[in-house]
Image 1 (tube, rainbow, N blue to C red):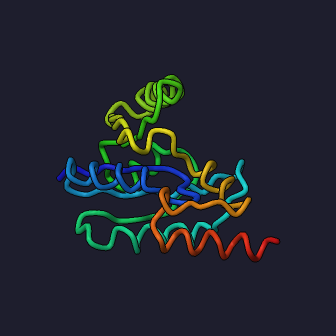
Image 2 (image 1 turned 45 degrees about the vertical axis):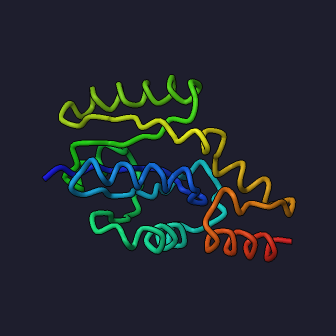
Image 3 (image 1 turned 90 degrees about the vertical axis):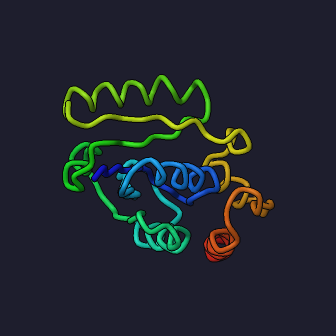
Length: 161
């Protein structure tokens, strides 16, 4: 059984993330979406909220699980018995950083491979940071995130102001 992980902060989960989840889930027997607890970022959503959103949006994928984690991605992969780390690439600028991570991970964990999935062209410009910035100014984000996520983002910004 091939297990892969797709790690990220997913703050918030976007259509770009969901596209990678959909495609990666067809390549492995089991895909674990790893929601990263990143101490260097101040997230809009709590880890529990991000996990719940992704669980709700991937409920129909029988081989997708969602878990939170902190620390090294390769350690999380080992805990999950994963042999593949899935990473999405939007642009060439992502590639250099992601390649460094993949090579470093390969030194730390030679038994775990990283695969890169290029994003669907219609999401190549999309990032969680962009979505949050647009939403913070009251802009429309319905083209970037599912309706359920949009409602939660708007509620967060309404409560912040």
